[in-house]
Image (cartoon, rainbow, N blue to C red; front, side):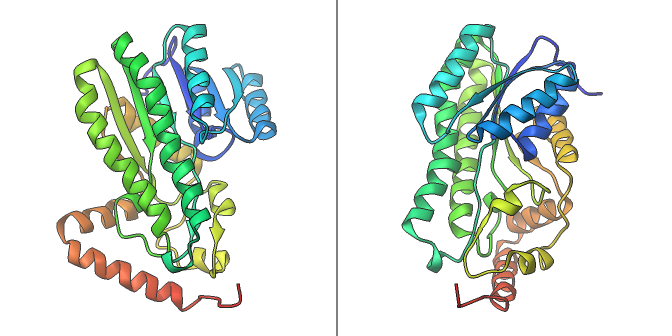
Length: 275
């Protein structure tokens, strides 16, 4: 049975669409008060308006997670206004489909700033509050690419592996203070990140055709994530394919590396040199 969230407060970054919005929709149905943050102000306002029209209690905050001061203000203001923070979903993220040889320093810096520093900024702001109040759950969105050799996503995978490692350390440290930590590694979800991904020397339509699984709907992803959070799971892995590849990498790493080599070989068959 889904946990009743009446009286609880959740902050979700990257909440204007995709998994962030789906989490907001699911949590609103369970009575949670939502503080939703995104860099896309117009889309965020539309999302919050649609949620509130269904009876949800939600507010919109335009935030760039790359800016530590903005994230600090978001979290401190929510705590001062609402008196508690039960959940922080560090969900904002960007993707890049490119071989490392084609990845520019600007690409690296943007991915690190959003995918890693964005998570760091959220943790840095909320962790002291949760320690002081004696409860809370920090949920960091990583990726299947944070668990396995991710062909043609080296820079993205580096940030997501870092999020997994950070979450592991935080989980071990935070338990003594009553704070829970989970890391979400979804696999393919049918969200705007599939369209906003930057593709370098690859045709996105072709890459999707050779993907190992079909994307799952965001609401299904959100329900699976919340089920994992309700159970205080550390790793919240969503799709069958991600589970299988993760187990392969854990138990037979040499075979996992071979799968990665096969994948990049297949992708290179569709490589475009005219970009």
